[in-house]
Image 1 (cartoon, rainbow, N blue to C red):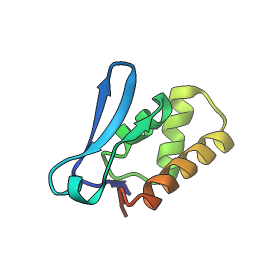
Image 2 (image 1 turned 180 degrees about the vertical axis):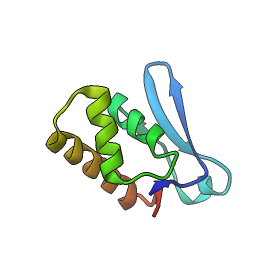
Image 3 (image 1 turned 120 degrees about the horizontal axis):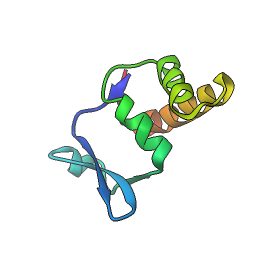
Image 4 (image 1 turned 135 degrees about the vertical axis):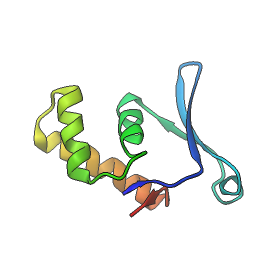
Length: 88
């Protein structure tokens, strides 16, 4: 899975946001606010990755255990799927 084309991540002041561009701006209204961990995952998902690969990277970056990394990866990717932001 990976992030659909047409969404860009921007840092504005102290906020991290994702906004749609082009034709997607007509379909997806608004923006998404991310924290630092969500930004890290978003950046990973610019390339095709599995949830397990995302969890591995979270363990490397943050030194968390597999269970926590998997839960974080699954929860965030599910939110992206629910919002139709991922390509399978």
